[in-house]
Length: 248
Image (cartoon, rainbow, N blue to C red; front, side):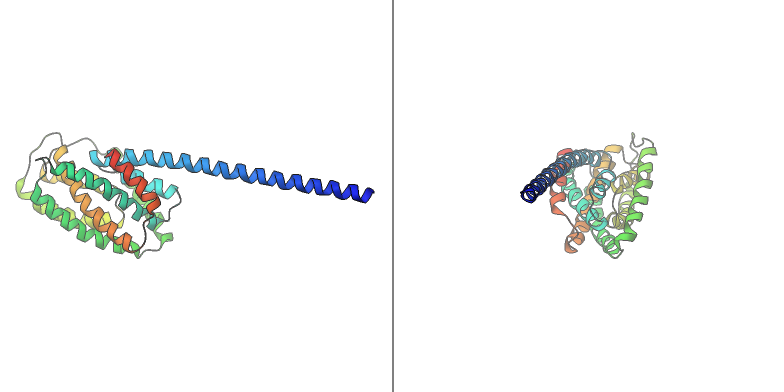
């Protein structure tokens, strides 16, 4: 009789322990879902703000890329996913800018083509680098560019356009910044804009508009390479792209 009672007691304890584990797993699963939802909301807000920053002064990638790395995406996947989101937002912004007369169309078209070509080369280069080596490079470049954007003074309030320098400057920047845009990318728009202001005498609005179109070319070429290499996470890229288009 005592043995039966003891066995029933043991069985009851085992059942209660199993129920406890089930409840614990359910709470853990619920907590992870809540965290995931909160993370998604924050990421989308970052995407909207990054789109606005890109369309205004460039540098939205300085916000998007760290958010993607923080979400756990491997460096190559984060870069490719960022390019998809950037290209979508840049397409909308470029279409808006081209409707106005503020963009020098000949220079912008030449720069757009050059950026596509050299961003492909830059992306091919970065795809050859191992992920373990790439992550420190990305972090260092992001830190440097963050302080560049933060400390860069306001300029470009007045225009003094140097017509003879616009096309040569565009080609030169298309080669250098096109390669960089494919290799990493964040800050490309800001550097293109600064180049037009300081090198061609553009005002802020004209420089931002033209730089955005060139940046779009770089995004297209780079995204194409990452897509071929299957280095784009579309589950992350599509929501980020929509958020970027809203912000831009």
